[in-house]
Every structure is written in C-alpha cells, then in structure tokens.
Length: 492
Image (cartoon, rainbow, N blue to C red; front, top):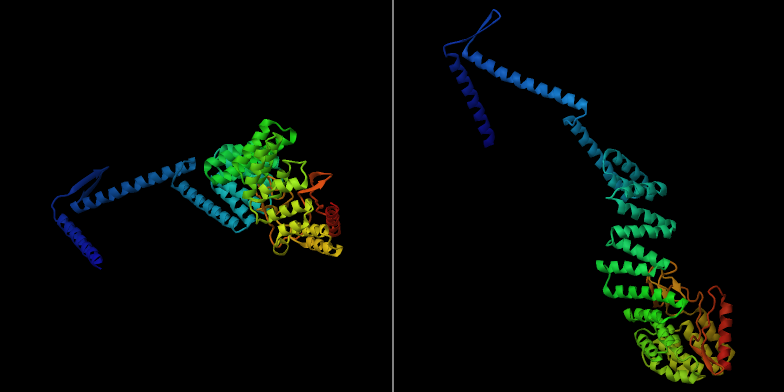
C-alpha cells in the first residue's frame, strides 16, 4: 500500500516537473535556424529539445535494425544465434523428456515403449552412452537379442562405456550358455575394473566351473583386497580352490609336493571335511599314520562325518573287526552323543558281531531320529540277533520311506549331491555345498541309500562295504538290496 502510494506521488511530481520545465523552456528567448537547400527552419528551445529526443530514438532504432539484419544473416550462414539456441534448447528438452519416458517405461516393464522413446531420445540428444544403453536394455526386455547385442557392441567402441558394453555381452553369452566366450569377456571386464564385485563373482564362478583353479585363486586374491568378504569366508574359499586343484593333481599321480598341497589346503580351513579326508590320505600315503589319525580326530570333534570314519579306517586296512573297534575308541569318544558317532559305533559292533552292543550304541535313535541308515542298522541288528524275517522286513519297510539324514546339499538350489564338489552341478554355485539335513518337504527316499558304510570283515580282513542303490531303482529293489545286506551280517 505504502509503496503504491509512493509510486503515485513520484509520478505526479515527475509530470509536474516536466510540465514546469517545458513551460519555462518555452519562455526562454532565442531560436535555432536551420537552412538546407533553400529551405529554412526556425526552432524554438522546446522544439530543439524534442528534435534531439527524436534523433536519439531514431539512432537507437537504427542500431537495433542493423543488429537484427546481422543476426538474420548469421542465422542463414549457420552460425549460433538466439534463434538457433532457442531451437537447440527445445530439442534438448524434448530429448530429455523422451529419455525420462524411456526410463519410466523400462522400469514399468514396457519394453517396446521404452525402446521407441530411447530411439527418439537418441535422435534429439548427443548422449550415446545413455541412449544406447537404454536401447540395449529395452531390447533385452523385449527379447530382441540381436538389437541388444549391436547396442552393446557400440558401447564397447567408446572408452567411457567399454566396461558396460563388455558386461552386457557377457550376460548375453551366459544366458545363451556360451560359457567359454562369457569367461573371456569376464576376464576383459575384470582387467578394466578389477575391484568390481559382480564381475569378480561371475569370473570366479566360471573359472571354478571350468576347473581353472589357479585363475580362480588369483581372482579370489583380488576379491580379498576389496574387503567384500569376511576373512574366514575368504580362507575357506581359498582352501576349497586349493583342495580342488590338489584333488585333480592327486588323480594323476601322488607326489610329495601334491601331498603337501593337500595338507596346506586343510590347514587353511580345518572344518572343510573333504580337505581333512584328502590331507589324511596324503599322510597315509607318506606313511605318517599318527598325523593322519590326529588330523581326523580333530576334524571329527568339529563335525562328525562318514567320510572321516572311512579315512580313519584306511589307516589300518588289514585289521580285524575287534582290532578296529578298539582303535576307533579314540575317535568315538569325541562327540559321543552325536548321531553320526552312535551310528559309527553301531556299525563297528555289527561288523564285530556284537549285536546287543550295537543296539545299545544306537540308543534312542530309532525313535527320535529314524533315518534310513538308522533303520537299516536296526534291521541288520535284528537279523544278527536271530530275529524273524517279519521283524527284519518291518525295519526295512520303514527305511524305504524314512528321511535320508544329513547329505551334501546346495545352499542355493537345495540340490542333493552324492559327494562333495566345489561347484554345484545344478546351479553352478561355487562353495555352496554343506553337510546338513534336507528340508522337511523333500522326498524321503529318491535314491542313494547307504547301509553299513564302514567295515564288514571278509576272510579275516576288513574292507569298506557301502551299499548304494541306484537313484532310479524301484522301492522293491531297495528292499531287496537291504535284505541281502542283512543276510550277509547274519552269516558273519
């Protein structure tokens, strides 16, 4: 309100001052006479002032017209002008709008719309590192692999986007199952950005899948520098890689150097059961039975496992069942309440034909943890104790539908493996197998039945005698195999 009042007062004062000045100027005596070509003009003071103001205005308008004409000439010549800048701004705005629409469509799963908008943005914007990537992702979403591949190849040609292009091509090759080419692309991406975590994981998985253990250990060493994994996990995975490499070497020929490599793998991760077994066998091959027994006992205290017991039996392969029962006391006194320890003791007593002791060793397992192995042992104990065929067959019938107990199971896909492997054969995950019980909703028995896996004396000697049923066998064949095994125990 006050400001409006002040503006009105100022306007009135200005008009009054101009009017007063014009009146005073008109009373000033004198005049200006202009003569040109016989034409004579006489101007008073007020008229002179008006003529000067008009002249200034005309000069200003003339300069503006000249500037406009010059700008129009530059526009025609292709130089940057206000007009070109206007159209350029309009073009950029439309390009960014199309880019935004493409990103929204891509996030919403509208692949075709995203590709159309991305191509429009590509026409308006000079940003190939963005628009080409959007075109590639939209093409992938719509299933146009050829267009996506061409877009990724364009990205590879630019130094700024080479890494993104290589990773895009790598993903395509993985989806197509071309792991050889994918591995080469992963190596190139790893060389460009060795600290990129996803590239490290993909390369490590492919190297492990291809059996390139040395390359995988180098990749894992680079991963260790980024600090993306805990130290204990890194040690375990390095031990898995060392074990896998040593395992391949041992398949060809056992040498001192290879044995030492196996033992080193176990020292890196003492809880890795396959490493403990292989290291113990390395000691056995060197004749160092004492170290092998000590190593297996320590591993058994951490996690009882049938493979450890089998390796412990290999220390003295020619001992009698009674001698074996006595020697195994150093192993079975550790984790005595563990189901694996109880089953091992029962198997040893069955092999020594001490069936009441075998029953006592099992304890309450047939009621509290009735797995295939426990029920099969009960069938063998009943047969060895002189039980009727009806009672033995009842135990075997229960074993057919009983859970299998702990197995090597992939933590990613839950696939069950007969033996430990560094890479899951189903989902190709690296170091994903763990010894545990399958989920409760798994089928109780789909194959692979283990019965009396330790030792049954044959002709005064002891040999491992695992009974394994083929995964595709029918239930009747499983029962038949179990009955035959029980009869062998009875005859012993």
